Length: 196
Image 1 (tube, rainbow, N blue to C red):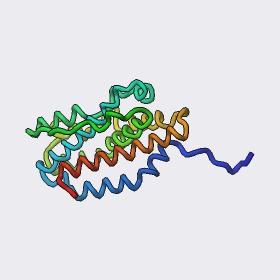
Image 2 (cartoon, helix red, strand yellow; image 1 turned 90 degrees about the vertical axis):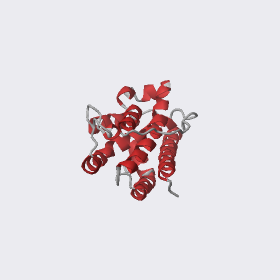
Image 3 (cartoon, rainbow, N blue to C red; image 1 turned 30 degrees about the horizontal axis):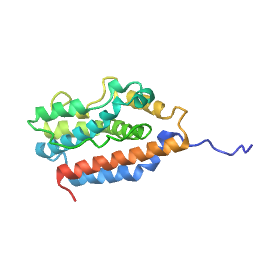
């Protein structure tokens, strides 16, 4: 037995590491889109957010994801984004669901991206409140914290991700799901902001 051997990386750490470049690309795309420059720009962001959340919440119907993440009822922001669009007198437009053929374990990767964006939305919420006059109760529900708080719900999700039981091949599929989710949100941003 080699005392210097290390345990395999936790899935949450692997996801963070292996999607870091995609995360940076998303930041660059948001910089290019300037979604908080005006209410009109912000509406485009909320529409993209709505379609992405719709993709994610479609996965909630899968019994396997329900078993892996038993508190799904507190997660997801599809209804919040739709309510925000109504507040702002806007419609989401049409887009086909991108997760029609996604199942566990890839679904966990999609949820990882969604939950990570909820955690990071605290900074975005502060910005839109100051610049655009929206709030957690009008126009920016999609950026609001969960009632229990962002950090509590995130840590609980990470505990589900890092629970033992997924094989190396299944973990690879989770990472692939996260990559697909980042790509999908990028496609939605480019579509709604008419970016190249």
